[in-house]
Amino acid sequence: MQAAKRRSYAGGSAIILSIGALMLGLSASVMAIDLPYYFATQNQLQTAVDAAALAGATALPTGEAEASEAALELAAENPVGGQALSESNLNFSVDKSKFKVTGEVYIPTIMGKLLCALSGNGGGKELEGEQVEGGNAGNSGEASCNAMKVVAGSSAAPAARDTILVIDTSNSMDDLGNNRPMKDIKTAANKFISIIAALDNESVDRIGLVSFDQTGAKEIGLTSANQSPSFTAVKNKVNGLSLFSGVGWNTNYEPGLKLALDELQSKGRKNASKIIIFMTDGIPNLPAPDSYYSYNYREPYRKCIDPVNNSQVVRNLCYTRNGQKICPVLPNDAIKNSMIPASAVQCTNTYVDAMESKTNLQTERAKTMGVTIHTISLYDPYLSGNSQDIFRRLLKQPTWRPEQLDFMAQRTEGQQYEAANYDSNRIQEIYETVAQDIHVRLTN
Image (cartoon, rainbow, N blue to C red; front, side, top):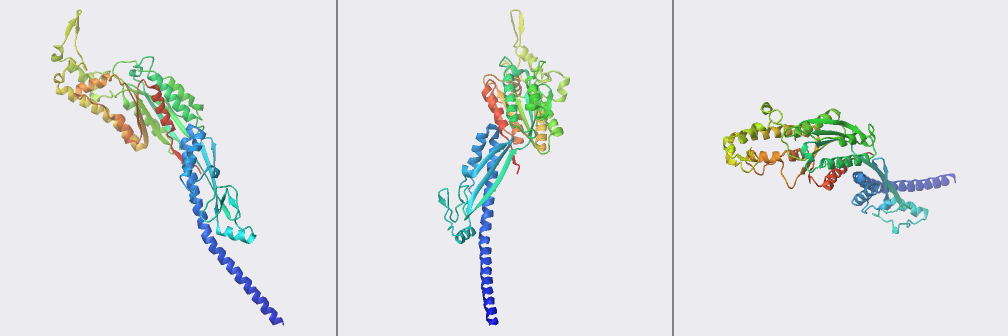
């Protein structure tokens, strides 16, 4: 009798163990399917919210609503479980300059279906009108016993930027009268600064200011909102810029670019994007070759132009009016190309080469330092600059134009912008565009 009971117990235990082993094996098989699906969905969702956070942070300077719209649009382009994300899956928020995204989806699982069946639920609960079946990620925050919630979060912020505004203060910046276009440049530069200040994060951006005419001046070094709330100190320096009032040509790119690079090299942060916004309304006409300054320190270009204007063949064109002797001077069309000797052409070629090489040397330095240069060129659609006309005549090249601005932008992977010197709206638009061209980073 006892032996029969023992056999019965042993048989029952064997059955229980067999069922347990079966369930364990089944669970292992199910988990081998469910877990990879879960983690694949998790990766897809993380990719989607990362992309959304970057898009939102990029659009953040234009407003929080615009940032959320950009984030939603990009999130929808990264499907999760075969379905596009929608507003019901996502939550957006802003913390200072950080744009945060949280996403969640529900995915059906085989284990969930088994548990539903065992509990008698049947696994038929719908998620926003769609029954959860295999391959349907669901678009609802409402759980069911056969669905597993997948959550991911991400945040992004503008990468730190160290920006130097380089502004031309040559006397031609008053060509339109009433201190224009300089007045328009000051307004646009202040708008740029205000956009940066609106990011409301002391650690993101620093701004400095350099001016140039015959020489250059560091008006203010790299300054953060922590050092000067809303960058007021930088704005004050912009508003206080005055134009060159001396003698001679006074558009010298090289010292302005050099001083900006000096500041970025000595004070630029290692983890910051380094940017120069270089604005000018004219062609470079300085620096001259070193030897030319001994001919005329204030106006070294006269080494090339004086021999032509004072030549006998040009003097023969002089005439007297009202008792005053009047002689043509370059770029007067009365002086024909045949009157310009080869020595003057060579002199001017040397002059132009010196300007280009010295400025381009600073551009190469910027490239080595990882500095991006955006150039803004103001032009007069009705008149050519006097120095440009003179260079063209001396070089006997009617279409000559300098290449430095092109080279600055292209070599450093920046952008080149142009505006008519009277077009204040376009000038402001350019500065706003550069301000909003932020480089973002994930801050998870």
